[in-house]
Image (tube, rainbow, N blue to C red):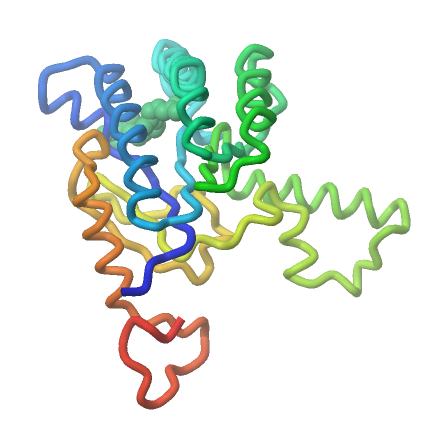
Length: 243
Ligand code: FPP
């Protein structure tokens, strides 16, 4: 079976999961953190080397203040409680998204997670926090413009590969598979550049319900897909092994 090297997940449905149980939304987010913990373990067990999760989008600031503060609190808790174990398990944590404008304690926790685990290689966990794909592309374009003004880049020589090197995801392989839970079928500004050729799997379960079995099911759907990257599948190549 073809296992994707990099899986990216839109962890959606925490609020609806809580509502269906008559619980406050924060209970859904708390259960979402539990599902995230299990998913990180499952990724290693399933042989996935890179896992990116959409934890807080640039657009999530428009939620009620109390919910934003709950989500920030959960990130603090996740890093304080889980960082040592992630490090012991050989997980390398990276964070993508706009760091400016985050409260100093959150920014330094993110730095600490990256610095502590920088030498690990068992699993790459990428947390998209204060992340928006368009914002990432605009920031990259700004850095390229600055480099051009300094004379370090000739605009005519710009290629997609060079451009990608200015994104937050520089050095990270593109996701082979993007999973979204909760039944919604859209990308919501998640990795728009990087997911150009990703396979997409939409699962009906809410994020807090996501288990290793759902993960394995998404990987099985991926394995049955034919990836062509704009080309054609060579004659005689079986489905799912063309990539
Ligand atoms: C979507 O559910 C989920 C989020 C906006 C945030 C994802 C966050 C977690 C899984 C927990 C936090 C983890 C960290 C590390 C901070 P939703 O609220 O949009 O659900 P709904 O669409 O049903 O309302």
